[in-house]
Image 1 (cartoon, rainbow, N blue to C red):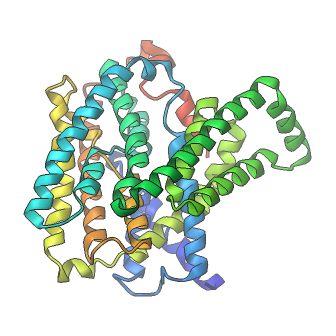
Image 2 (image 1 turned 120 degrees about the vertical axis):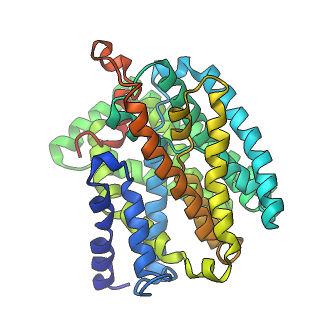
Length: 400
């Protein structure tokens, strides 16, 4: 990879902010970056080569950091979300069971062998997509909080389950690797909490800020890369390493200064690079040669919407239920891991992304409808809003 190629990646990646500029559309920045990669990669002009070793390494770093940010966005410390965990767990389990039935039907109709993978995809929700929509629309109330709890649980469970189902023949090995990564994340949580309680982090913060050492950022990246190394050594996706570390940090509370620094690195450089790389690795021309996978993609998107919308029966209003179906992280991880391991058939990667885009489009429309009925009352204050302050400080989105 040359500097000219790197400059081109950054320039074409600006399509993400351009499409996301209009707030009423609620289009995630990552969609534009994916489209840019598709246009200049294998599908389009062929100027970006995802097989380039340097490009791939930087993309892997961006993948790990993106999943770390997604994990830190899960509102595990918000007491209102914890109080809604009961209903959130029940609905997430119900969606999972319905997703298995829908996946079995899709696998039968299209004669594919990825029943378990399709079930995980349709059961998943994306906290990194849903929570910013809720925040920007200032939604509030018990129903919104219960939906948030459901999304957080589904997101976490599906990210843990994905490595086990994407390659069933090595599920045992993946389970052991996942357990090792999870155990390290638990140790990290207690370690970080101890450092916070003893005041050591504050001392490091003061020294770092005074001397411009960026110690917290350096330590955070060192831990992230160490977990990613453990994941690759144990044949587990770095997706799990990043997400597990993000959850550990979310449980303790991420310092705002570190959040801003990570925002700059991830959203300004490595994140866009990863999504452009991912788009460049997807050859949508394969869909033209394998048109049945267009049907698979549509079926996955509509199936996810149907199984999540079924929670209307369990008391969740339809606009919120449709919003909870929004997915991106799990399908992207499935495409990334599946492509790296050569487990997906020609056209299947495009089908997974197509299904995710359908859910995102419906979630954006549903968010506009929900804003008319579930706006947080001014008297509720910060605690009455669905998205806690911690979610903003974790990502640094409020003050980039």
